[in-house]
Length: 492
Image (cartoon, rainbow, N blue to C red; front, top):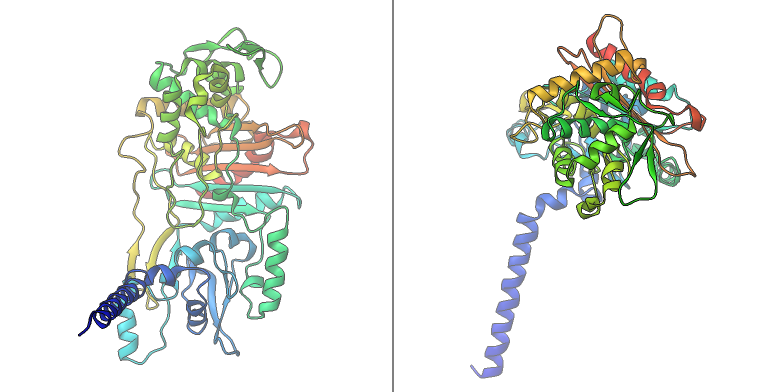
């Protein structure tokens, strides 16, 4: 064989081997990645032609499939409607899936390896293949209270509410407003679905957003719980410790002072840490922020979940952040403002619920989850959610958690969190009002748990925008009643 032919043969062999390797990679190693893509039309069309599993809250299906008289055979419908849309998401031919529809797509479509035996039985018995069912941790009564509370704020409102079971991390409620009707996106009238999606995606109020987990904003004074925890863990503070409570805090390296919201003192030049939390004293917590190192503040926030991705069964979780650059906190004024939940601090409602839940659980923060069980179409349990810690080490000691609980209870009984008080029940809570800019109204926050001595539920409510006058915006006023209703629903 002459040299040119030999060279050509070797080249062809190399190309053939490369082609086989690429096919093997695409069809074997990357198969699950392609199948899980929301924009994979082949998978979508295949899913439309078989019965998809249900998404359930208790025994009630909030997403299900019904026979249709068109070529796709099955129509995805959402009995849970707007109330559950931020959780279920939608299944759309043109836009794929979102929410639980996306994160649990392999189970709902019946393609998950956990359902292999069921697929094999369906094949042998010549039965119609069906997807598995996903049972959620949601408590319908708490979800009702959250959704009704948010919608009662009015039409032009951006807000969210979320609840967690402190001892396990089970998500008991997750509501967001404005919301949308997922049936309009799942319809087989694809022209109507595209029109609906265009309207929703262009809406300035972002109804497709699940604000409970996808919106991170300054948490304001609810973050003072994290600062109080850091001070108790690192500076030896306790509920009775004296802290600065004057009307103005002189900020080193700055020509500006940090004032209290009221403009006056918090009850004297020296007050207890408990009193500082009761009245949400900016100067007290600003001084604690200066006294703490930037590393101590950052580490305490991280222990509660800041800077981490911990929700694995819902997509697109926004990361809560203590700071975007730790070096910036070399400046005392920035540490002071960070300590009161301003400057670069950002949190999702889920994150602030986790702060309360960690305190309620004796200092241990549990990983939140929303998928309780996965069952086959014949209701055999094939997977179960299990409580796990987000870290081997607790966020705070049990003594610190006890002290924080004591102060939060006092904040409900004697301070700004009074709107969450429940007769005959000991409630722990904290308010927050976060400034954003002169052009827009502040954000209202509220976080709490109950019963304080045996916590069953931890809650966070965030009102991003409402029709409330700027002077009337306060976490207790807007978020307190919603949190109260959610806690009452859980413990009734």
